[in-house]
Each structure stands twice: as structure tokens, then as C-alpha cells.
Length: 640
Image (cartoon, rainbow, N blue to C red; front, side, top):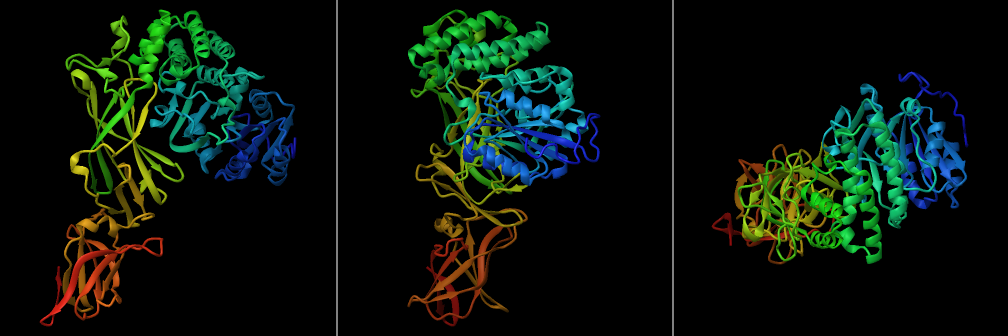
């Protein structure tokens, strides 16, 4: 260990934070991360929690790159950082356990060496955990090329259990655990090279915890897929070993529960995600034939051996229930036919309307899940509930139907920054599905309204944002995502109105891309309000006031409530090419209409107007108005 023990620190065994104690110990298992550890280190050193109230323990699992020396250097420079070096064990279980033993914090929080925390992550998670006496605290996780829980983070849970929150969605170790709780129950990670060691650890904690807290309204953890695909869990799955490790996790569940709803709830997650997912859709259809047979053999063997309670699959969506029925009936070929059908399903969408209301961009969409030939995934006779349109016959009716307890369809709009891939998710109002008989199947209609300049009070970064829609259909366990706009109503063929929003008066310009998709340019990074309004600029209005000649040009621009006038450009171009720039030009709202206006000196004949809003680019394009200011009879007036 480097720099250990750290002075002035002791373990809090009472559960109450006192002077000199550590609230959170962050444990990072490390092995040959290379450059990918830099963001992790930076995020851990930049926490809002005072350095004296948390510690970082890097446990290096025998790295052979330059990482050991780098960790020693960081530990030498920071009193709350420790570097521990152990011989290579081959998997994160051993170094995490070493970190637990070394930790002196009230809570132990696990971070992967290629991930990072947000600035207030430790402070906000500790505050929630401490006020609730939580044994486990889960902070919101954002995925970057990695799957993360969605349902779990729809709301905060101050105090919850397995039965009151969808905790089984989150089985990775990226959580905080009360150290005294881990010690009291002897909860540690299985060690050695193996899969699902985190599931064994987490499921024990869930089953034994009296209180779990979930912080959903603040993103704490960035779960990142490395560009070199070097994340530890990305290796090819060996079916026999993988499902052998899953049996060990099931052993824990059977030891800690009695047969019944609680056990079924826990096993349902593994049955659907670890097993049925692998005999369906693109996964099963895309396996090499020999590997497909091997995967099927191991999954079916485990299903018939340990997943025998009908309560496990009773509340799954119809696609999963059909897979389960075929798996249990040993119908391999039909299961493959089903997987090929599912693999071809896509999310169809049509943008019905888009407009501005107050500070929100409002979208109305029609959605449906269909195969390339138009075959729907869900059908209905318009009377009974929708049911899965299975491509194979002789499937029990109760497997095809949507069970009462299954999660309803969920549609979300995704707002994604084109350069950084930062993404924000907006909820929608999903109307009752339109149950269309015949070949079209079930169609959904959704409405979404969101402010494209901010989310949860935080200003969104400037640049181009692309718009997607995501649909999870009837407890399908997975969702489909597609760009919005290329298929749109005939009324949406014209350019869209830009907007000026918020007290900072930020320009937001929706537009159609070259592929016809809908995007929003925030703060005029690639286009200007004037160019966006080219086809809908009104005729200039000219009058005199105490400051001279006032020129006011109507703009087809939405002006949000509370927005202040925005500085603009208003030019007059003379016949010889000389330019007169007006004084103090602004875009503002007057009696519900938006104008660009400014003062000019008196005119000689025939000056052509041009209008624009400043861009970061020096060569910002100005839009010619197609009108001139003409002097006639001593008066200046517009003339086309």
C-alpha cells in the first residue's frame, strides 16, 4: 500500500458521521486500463464531498502497463487516495474484496476503472443513504454504449425493497453498500476468473437489506463502453461456464428465500435477461450454428432444472412467454423461426406534427413495430386485448396474450447531441393503442413536449441535437429506437419556425437534415435564424421616431415567454454595393408578433434590406429580404 494508513482517519462503526471519519470509501479494481483510467481518476479527485470525508482505494490486480506507477503517484499526492497492489487474480472479485477490507468509510462504493462519477455523486448518494439508514444506495447510471436500467430510474425511492422497486434491473456493482451491513452478513465477491460475480454479491445484498435507496433525479455514474472494446465483460460468453456461474447465484437465492412470489421475482430477471434473451431475436438468429446449439442446450437444461415455477414467467411480456413455451417444449427449430422474425422487426414512426408552445417543442408521433414486409408484431381484433403475432403455430393462447401484470408500452423521445453523444430522455403521453384489424396491427400515438435548451434546470450545450423515438412494447424486455422526421405528414414539408427561448434568449432552430430527419440547432452553431426564416420574412414597416428612421421586419420566429430581445443584424445594401448598418438592431416580441428592428439614417434611393442574427462564425450569412427602401416624394417606404 502507498501512503497507508492515512493520518486523521478512522472507521465509523456507529453509523454516525463524526469528525475525522470517512463517509464513503470508493473502491476501484484496476487491471491494465491504459489511458482509459484518466477520466476515472479525475472524476474521483473532483468530488464535491470534502476530501476529508471520502477516500479512494485503487486495488491494482497485477497490471503490466504503466498503471501501477501512475496510481502510486496519485496516492502520494492526495491524502485520501490509497494504491494497493496484489498479484493478478484474473477478475475483479479479489481486488474488490481487498478494497472492502481496507475501506474505513461508512459506505463502500464500487467504480470500474474505465468509468467515471459526476461531481456531486458521492455527496448526493451519501446524503440520501444516511437520512434513510439505507443498507444499499443506488445512484442513477448513464450508459455510453452500455445498457443501463431504465424503469428503476424513473423516480426516486427513499426507502424500498425488491418488492416495491424494480431493483433486479440493476445487477452491476456500481452502488454504495453500508460497510457494517456487508460485514454483518459476510457479503463478499466470489473470487477467481468467472462470470456473474457481481450478481452473486448484489443479489445477496438485495435479499438481506432492510432498506435500499435509489437516487434517480441526479446522474451519478457514467458507464462507458471503451472504444477498444476492452471492458472486462465484453469477452465471448462460454455457455457451460457462464450458466454454471449462474447456478451459484441461484443457490444464493434458494438459500435465502422460500418458494413463492419473492423467489419468482428474483429468478424472473435471470430467466428473461440471461436466458430468454439469448434464445430470441438477433442474438439467437445471429449465432453460428454450432454455438447456437450449445447455447440452447445449456439454457434449456438450466430452465428445466431450476426455473420450474410458472410464477417466474407469468408476468413476462408475450414475446418472452412464447420463447419460454417453445424452449420448454424443446422446439428448437420453431424457436429459431421466431428469432428470425423478431430480428427483422423495426420501429415504424411517422411525425404527425411539430410546433412551438411556450418554451416547448411539441411533437406528435404515430408508432408501430413491424417486419420489413409490414407484418405487425402485435395484432388485435379491436375487441380483445392485443396479442403477439407469432410466426409459429401451436402456441398456447395464454402465451400470446398480454398478461394483466405486464408493463405497459413505454415511448420516450431522445434528444442526442451529434458531437458529444450526450443524451437526454423525455417522457411522452402515450395514448391507448389504436387497435387496427388486418395487416397493420397495433399502432400507438404519442405526444411529447420538451424545452430543447435545458433539462432539469441545467442548460443544454450548444450544437446540433438529433431527435429519436424509443418504444418498449408490452414488457418486451428490450426497446427499439429510430430517428424522427424522415417519414412525416404532408403538412410538414416546409421549413420549420425557429425559436428564441429562456431568459438567456437562446436561438433554437429545428430543421430537416439532408436525409429528412428532424434536428435542432441550439445557439446557431451551423445555421442562423435569418436563413431559417428566409421564405417567411414579412414586408418591412418604416416609420420615424425621435431616434430617426425605424425599420421593423416581421419574422416567422417563435418568441418564448420571458425571453429578452436578442441582438441582431439589420443591413441596408446600396445600389453600388455599399452597406449601411442599423444601430442597435434586436429581435423581440411586440404584441404577440416577432420583429427584427433597428434605426437607420436617412436614405438615398433604393437600399436593399438584409437581416441576420450573429453567429460564432465571422462569415455569417445574411438573408436578403427581397424588398427595397425607396425614397419617393420625400418619404421612405418599402417597395417590392
